[in-house]
Amino acid sequence: MSRVIFMGTPDFSTKVLEMLIAEEDVIAVVTQPDRPVGRKRVMTPPPVKEVALENGIEVYQPEKISQSDDLQTLIDMEPDLIVTAAFGQILPKSLLDAPKLGAINVHASLLPKYRGGAPIHQAIIDGEKETGVTIMYMEPKLDAGDIISQQAIEIEANDNVESMHDKLSFLGADLLKKTLPEIINGTNDRIAQDDDKATFASNISREDERIDWTQSAEQVYNHIRGLSPWPVAYTKLDDTNMKLYAARIEEGKKENPGEILETTKKAIIVGTGSDDAIALTEIQLSGKKRMPTANFLSGYQEDLVGKELK
Image (tube, rainbow, N blue to C red):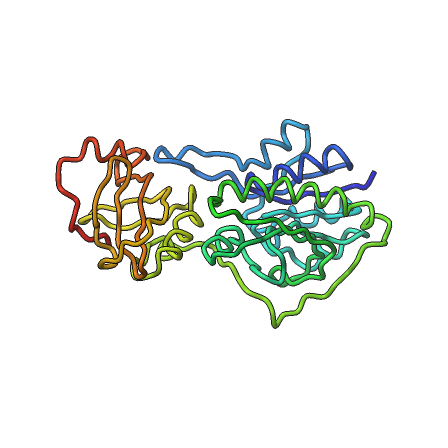
C-alpha cells in the first residue's frame, strides 16, 4: 500500500478520500480551516475533516499552506503520493516535489476546459452537454498539469449543480481507483495540456449570481440550474431579493424581458430576450424560507402581472 497525503475540502472530496482510505494508507489529511456557517455563524468543520476524524486520520488545517509550519511537517512524512480534490489552494513546489510518485489532482471537468474553482457551475451555465473528471499531475499553475486519465459524463437537461456534483464525486473516486495502479506502477499516460484550448471557471461572484433577463430563455434557465442549490441565482422583485432555485422554459411567450407575464397555480411566468419565457417554480424571498412558487402565490396578496424583475 502507498503512503498517501490527501488534500481536499468540500463534499465533492469526501468520496475520493473514502476510496483512498479503503485502498491505500492515508497518513494525513489537509483541509481548509473550520468556517462560520449559517445565520448563527456556527463554526463548522469541512466535510473532509469529518471523514478523516471518523477514520482516525490526523488532520492539518493551514489557512495558507505555503506560509504554514505544516508544510515542512508534511514533507517530512515522506509520502509516496499526494492526492488533491477541490482543496482550494495552489501547492508550493517544495510540497509537489516531495512524494516519489508525484502529486495528482482530481478535477471536475474535461481539462483543459474549465480550469479553476467552479467547473461544475460554469459547464451548466454555458449549456454544455457533457462534462467529466480529469486525473492530472499538479504543478504550481492552476489546473495546468499533464493529464493522466479522463472520463466524460452527460449533463442532462434537468441536471443542476447538486445532481452533477453528486455524479462527478462518485465518478472521480471511481476513475482514480482505476488509475491508481498505473500511477503506482509508473505505466500511466502523461499527456500535456494544450494551453491554447484552456477555458476558465473562476469562483462565482455575487454579480455572477444575478439574472440578466435580456438573455434567451435557455440561457436564463441554464443560469438558474447552474447555481442551484448553491450559491443560487437571484433577481429583484420591487426592492426585495428573490432567489431562484428551480425553473422551466415556457415556450411561445415573447414579451418584455423581466416582465411578469402571468401567474399560474404553480409558477411565475417571466419574459426573456427570446421567443420563450421562464416559469419560476421554486423561489425564496429575502427573509423567508425557500419554497415552491405555488406556496408563495397562495399567500401573496398583490397582483404580480406587469411587475418587472431586475
